[in-house]
Amino acid sequence: MPSILTRQRPRTCVACRTEAPKKALIRIVRTPDGSAVMDVTGRLPGRGAYLCLNVECLRKARKTGTLSKALKTTLTDACWEDLERCIERYAEEHGPEERRRELRSLLGLSRRAGLLLIGMDSIGTEARKGKPLLLLAARDCSAAVQKFAEGLVSGEKHQLVSLPVDVEGLSTALGAGNVQIVAVLSHGGLADKLKVLLAE
Ligand SMILES: [Zn+2]
Image (cartoon, rainbow, N blue to C red; front, side, top):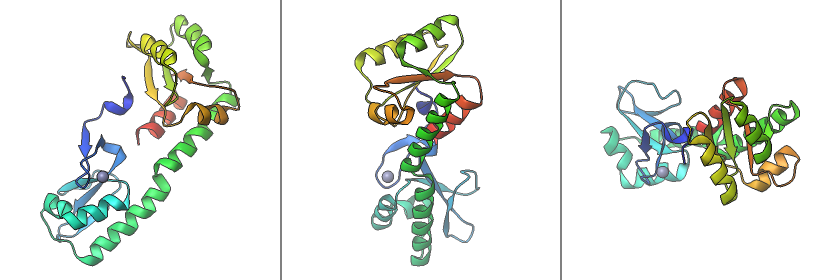
C-alpha cells in the first residue's frame, strides 16, 4: 500500500535486524573519545548505528556485540547504562503508545473543528471535487474500504496512510460508530501534523 511511511530509505536495527523507516529507529553515534551517545537529532557527526526504540534491543546488542562492532569501538559499562537510561526515557516520551494517544487526540480535535471527512461517502464526494486528500485508514479496515482507498490514491493525487489504530480505537477517538477511514485536506497544517505523528 502506498504510504508516506515507506518513502524514506529503511534502516535496520543492529540487534534484531528489523527494518524500519529512519525515524522509527534511534541512532547511536560514536563520540570522538570512543564512547557512544544517543543521537536524538539524527544529525550528529560520527559513525552511527540504528536500534529499535526499546531497551531489549540495546541489551541484545550489548550481549551479541553487534553495536560495538557497528560503531567499531568498545563501550564501557557506564556507557551502556547511560544508553539504557536515555532509551528508556526517550521511549516513554516518544514511544508508540504516546504517539497513538496524541494521534487519537488530534483526530478528535479535528473532528470537532469540522476538518475531518469521515467514511467513504463523504470522502468520495470531496475527492470528486478535486482537492487532494490525505486518507487515513484504520489498521484493520475492511477489504472494501481498503479497495476504495487504493482506487482513490492510484491517480497519485491523494495519499493513503494506514493508521496505527484499529476501527474501535478510531471510532472511540471520534465519538462515532464503526469509523474505518477518515481524510483531511493533504495541504495544510493539520495534514502536516498528522504526517509528523505518523512518520516519527
Ligand atoms: Zn531491534
